Length: 403
Image (tube, rainbow, N blue to C red):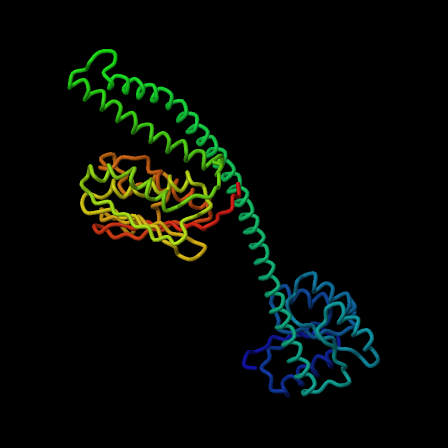
């Protein structure tokens, strides 16, 4: 024990005080000793300075030891208390320990060895109690911080929940708006296309070459606009959960051939080779035929749109006895690696600027992915910039209509 211990003895018997002091010195303990003859003077000394340990007699002239301990605890005196008792006062000493004393020592057994041992034990227990008190206080503070943090997280969760609900309502309103506007715009566009077709039949009067060219452009642009509106309308139905699938059995090979041939004119117009390969031992599938055709149309037309030279290849094959694959490969511009994670997002195009070369709503791939998922299938893409892309769709041979 290297530290000099400050010891206070509160005892009205000077002989007992001297006995404690001699026993401590004999035990070779580094101590600084001070004494008080009554409780009042002892309390006054404690107000001026702190002590490492306090020895107190039970029988004081102005206050008994039990009341003194209560005063010391009330004044938050932070030091172990050792009660000095006379012969036969052990029961009283135990009561004082219950009140807060650390230990008791009979004056008849006051020896340097016993006193040093009692002092060391009292200091060790007191330090342990302080450590426990500190740990409990830190634990309470941590618990309070955790409770506060949990409350903040709960408030954030409720706020996020409210925001999510608002976003859902906004998304629902947006889908309704898109569906309504798409439906309303289709009527005048169909009228424009109808009158354009009528004029192209040279009815009621023949048109000049310039007029035919202008009407043809009017019809083509109206048709393109109608395709865009149909994409928006289909996507709004998918988002709103209003697109119902009709599952039936059909020949997937025939559907792939027919759809590819319908789009061959687009490839011919760009001088691209459109290759077709059917590797189906059993071409019969159960799915929504219209949805499969729509997905295939989007993938092939996209491949042609983003390919300026080379070819587009369509291949239908069997992955296993229960799954079939349709791959659309092109030699087009490809997709940058940073854009691949977003390629199936709605309204997303690799070129988002107003000067982009390829027109469209950016909904084609989003619609394709949604339709494939509804048929319990998967869609993936592999691409390299400048070398082309491969979009691969896998669907089960017999999908289950889940509404």
